[in-house]
Image 1 (spheres, rainbow, N blue to C red):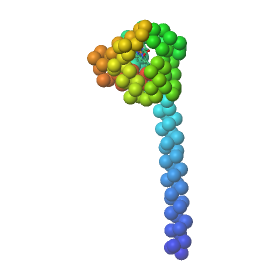
Image 2 (tube, rainbow, N blue to C red; image 1 turned 135 degrees about the vertical axis):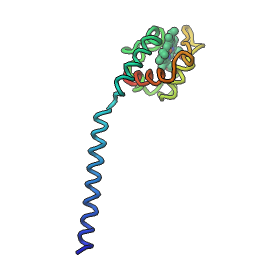
Image 3 (cartoon, protein in one colour; image 1 turned 30 degrees about the vertical axis):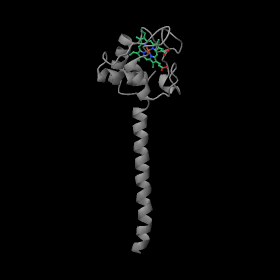
Image 4 (cartoon, rainbow, N blue to C red; image 1 turned 180 degrees about the horizontal axis):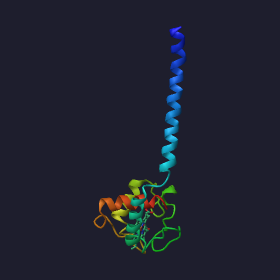
Length: 128
Ligand code: HEC
């Protein structure tokens, strides 16, 4: 009798746990989704307007002075250098720029942006 109940109870408890964790996972992806916390994205947008908009469109892929950045993080590779799209490569691009690009270089932003501004900018670029 005891072994019988144990056999039944164990998988039962297991599937309840599984259901609960699935439900929790569902709730959290639904909430967070693609979008980052709004204040950080808004801050990143301000950083973009101040530092990048001069040369890059945020809402188009065609070229201004540099390539349009709409959908940047959904691309497979960076538009000019063709490096794979990773947060690391995008950060590196922003930090070092493309000082030797012709006909138009991109300046480095390593000393212009604070780490928090850089993080916010990345969060914003991911929403484009
Ligand atoms: C003075 C103009 C200018 C400014 C300001 C500028 N960029 Fe650029 N950017 C360029 C040019 C030109 C290129 C293309 C360089 C090349 O052909 O290698 C470029 C390329 C890029 C690329 C693609 C790099 C690749 O490897 O394909 C990204 C991403 C980028 N810029 C992001 C930014 C961000 C974010 C900012 C603001 C912090 C910014 N840029 C500011 C001119 C600029």
